[in-house]
Length: 425
Image (cartoon, rainbow, N blue to C red):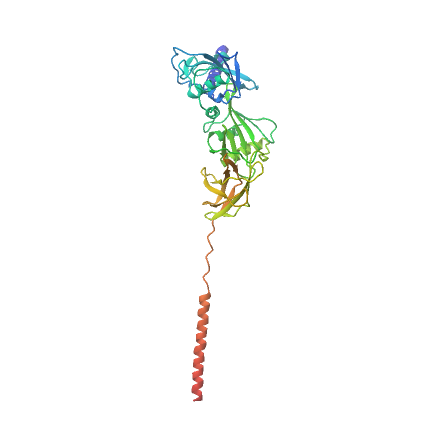
């Protein structure tokens, strides 16, 4: 009975390990690759294409194919995860074969049997996905291997980064954060903290379409990890930049800048403060300075002038012939765009704006050939106050009274004169 119980327990553990590998996501922090043109097993880590080598990215385990009749050079790839003791741990193996005619390469998936596990789709053949094929070709060239296939024209940092992203409602299994006020790299494992840190990669964050350089340079590095058995696969690495004066915070991920929704920013601030983060903000020395004039009294529906001064990195005034002002009302993801023009003083720009809604308006200034963007301190817009009703004038009544009085005096004078004349006669 004890032997049966032990066998059942091992079977359950084995099944759980298999399920974990089958549905694991995230990129392996390291792989080794060996084959023609390479000297032994070459380690590859900290490479932007590892997201395309991730489970479910290099090939689709639900789409097996028949064994190919012909295949080109073959390369053995071993994928690793981070173990709980901070070391690399191999979790599965596969073989990638170039297509002899230049088509999509072939994958034979050995699986995790050699490392004490099992995984979905092992022991079968697959076509490499388009992104997986591109990543493998670029990796081989990066390692000095000569291949006949054309070099794919893709940006691995952008294409492969999508395999790190969380789906709505998902969260990391572990995360780390470092930055001002924190004692080194702090691990986050509580469910609330992991859910909050996962939000920026799932849905409520707002993408920008140009290069952004926040004026505030203090950032926090956030790294997420996905559980894989007793080890972890890399999730994404983010940099979070809180705004010092109540403006919107920014996130840098996948080589793009994003502005965070206010509720996500507030949640992140709360988690970081609970860990000891100071959120002290230092100026970004690599960004031009934009200083707003004294904030005007903005009233909804009324035109007002907004002005600001731009100084480039060398301290000289900006010479752009215009600057764009983007204004977004509170939770709105859309923005109203206004064109500010130089107004005489070097580096100074101004623009008349008419804002329709009272409340907080977030705004940023964009200028120059590189589309530099700076997030400004929010503007407060008050509701328009209806004019007080004017009390009806009492002047007509006073004039009527005076006229009546004069008329009475005239009548009295006439009557008095007539009576006096009658008495003398």
